[in-house]
Length: 233
Image 1 (tube, one colour):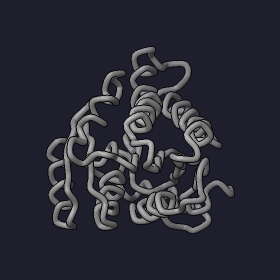
Image 2 (tube, helix red, strand yellow; image 1 turned 120 degrees about the horizontal axis):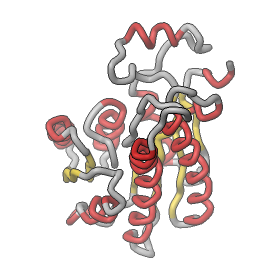
Image 3 (tube, one colour; image 1 turned 30 degrees about the vertical axis):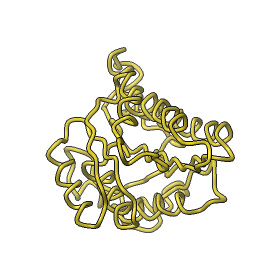
């Protein structure tokens, strides 16, 4: 899985380990966090391999899948890595655009391609993309992120159709789960007042939703909202 070193990615990785999966754990700059997550997953019984890569690099996907080594064949892919830059349509630079789409969209697309090509013909696989419910109500101040996640939703459905019946592709669209970098819990508590469930999610609901989509063998092309009902308002 990508972006598994900390925060929501770490919670998904540990839930997979607890469920009995071995892990190919990708990270970019969070090497020490990745090592801590790997140690915790190993304590849960998982065999773990770490692979560092910058998903904005077009060549990264093939190297990540190849890093599985003796854990192959990889049968589950969770695309969790993301960037959440502050930008608008009026001030965004081409460099920021390329990097955000590289991490949030191109990375998942070509990782899914590499995953599908590496999966033995007799095996079945599952892909889960982590996205954001707010693509329905776009963030004006996170323009490149919103466009990338919206395209990731479209990719989820297109890939589910292209890779069926052997590989299922689904997504989880998150709401207010954890404070973004640079914000504290008070920021989320303020957001919670606008959510029907009147609370923020934390990491457990995300991990549960990912496991559900991996285990449910009759679900593909679905994007499950885990947002406390925020989309209702």
